[in-house]
Length: 183
Image 1 (spheres, rainbow, N blue to C red):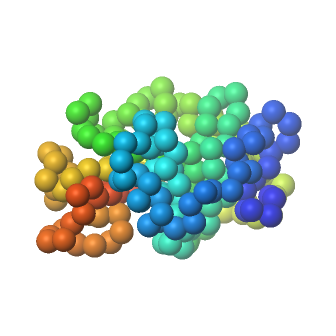
Image 2: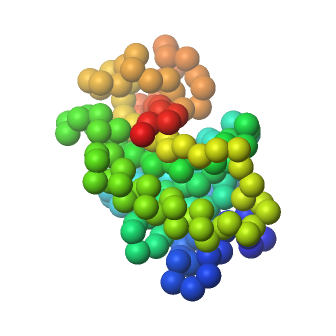
Image 3: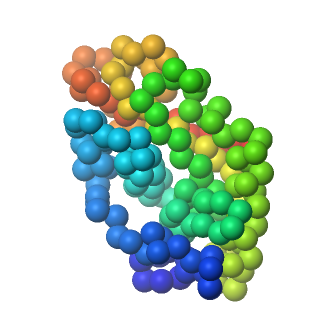
């Protein structure tokens, strides 16, 4: 592990993006960037991953790696939950449910790639004492950016910042859903 807490795998498994510092230090800063003005699809995805990483940390999780890549694919987040279970977290950020719920984007082929990539990550970190865990699982975390009155959002999942639905919602809000052991 390097000093930023991310895993550095030897050789071609290492990804320079894993070593970059996150430009946003707070959930509020990332949320502002996501909901303010037009944000392109790729940037929305990166911001969603940053937001989810910060959200998990606020829940007592330790982020082990971000955007870790190998020849089989990429892991959005690898994190230890408070019970020391290692979770490979796939983050899906969407503005609408036009093409279905975001979790449906993690189909059979994607799950196979994630499993293969996770095995490579486990092999790469095998000797690192900071990677000790009591089990593994695959989670999917969905983050929806939208108005609370938009179809598919209201009442489906809570606001990401913990506020209860009701008066005073911002024009654009973030809704989060974590599916532990999704596959």
